[in-house]
Length: 208
Image (tube, rainbow, N blue to C red):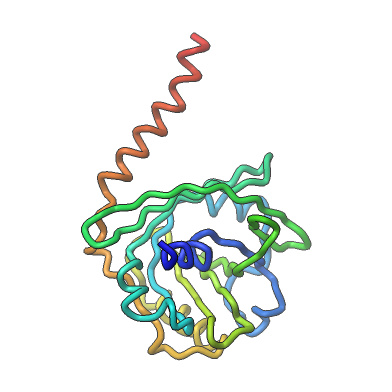
């Protein structure tokens, strides 16, 4: 559970700052975060791969917990981001939800919980992808994760991620890509989507 929470906080819960100076060496990605970007983020995201220098999150630990996808749903009025996460652990699917606040300032986006920021966001609209970077100042705990709207990675997107990994001082050998065949969350996802539809119907029926 402790390892799961670490992965969630480091790479899934998206505590972001898009234009932080720590990312100055990463020249890829869209530079501006605005309402249009937030609307674009509202979608299903597949974890494609990760690179880590954190010994607690490397190799087998990441591989065991890497088959993940999630739904992001920003609420522009309340400045909240709903996160629905599906994670395959062995033959089991685990489902989690959370709500985080976000702030937009000077073209940057920060999502937070308890006022603390953990990671940074690089938007790759051209590729339908985002990169999340954590702990870039700490060479022993750096983490980069690649997410995309489609589960398959193109050669071009793979090269973009490899470039980002190198730019923050990490090595390509530290990249682990997802084995999507291990995904066991199809039924759980279907169940949650059906529950969501029922939840939307109930208020309408009450007003009829």
